Length: 420
Image 1: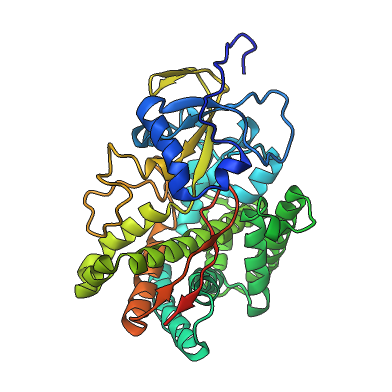
Image 2: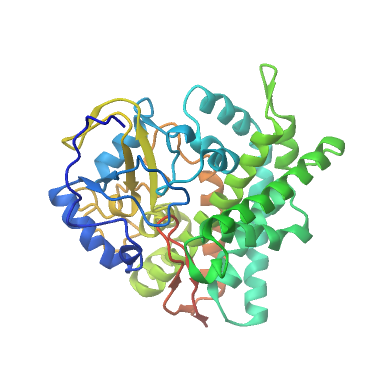
């Protein structure tokens, strides 16, 4: 950041404090709505919860309007994800930690394209067909267990089980490591949540989660090299394009990304989506009236409504203009996806849950560009199977008020009472 750049004063609507992120999503959107209408790119103080001190960090540009979030997402030549420039996290996190845990998310071209191609080559059509069959069986088993056990907590009994099961099966995580993997993922996304952190330092919470995931991944890498199996880890170990293969470090980092993104996005979209259906019985009835035809549009509305990942950042490599605001080279830019998905200029009556909403250009899985979600097809398969099983086999299911994980990264539901 150039010392000659003159900074504006911080905006009177402040988006960085713990107080702001402790408010309800609807309440937070009142602040976002005012900014969308009047100051879609505003200067803000640095976020609470930063895990490293950066004396050069005087703040960031908050991007809250849909068109600007998409513009940043698609212009990777200007808006960088490089860990050495700051990476993709809202708060400040050490570059080495980002490299070790976020894989292709924190890569710019051309390295991003090379690594992504290697990872994508492991998702062969045969592998996808195998995963789809597993998902259908898992969704059935989850509802079997729910009916046998009786209702307690929807997140524990339903939402978190399918993504954990799917990722574990597709990668090859042994049964004895699966609960450890879930606890590690909770540490990775709940480092700002007092209940999850306990008496630990937040950064230590993150490190412990990452360390556990790396340990599970390395054991799998070594096992599949000596004894290949019919799973994604074997495909990653064997993936090769033009003589290049993924290193152990790259596989471990991708496993961390897969475990966190693959678990939490589907898990929380399921929780928010099912709660929205229970709160809007007309939409639930509409979906059940023709499930196969309506579920694709419903899933898109679940993702818009939930917006499972609320924030990501970029850093400007060069001076540019965004939303009428001059951005200097080196400036930090934060995209607020939860605001973009309630943008009145794009979504009519954005706080109305509507499974027939069309078009629905939500940014629930990112705003496009080279960093589009690689696992989006698997996420849609999971939700299609799970919602079919729950809605048809537990038609009188009811949900209580959700309890949220405190933080500004994942829109996570910690627990939610269920009855039927």
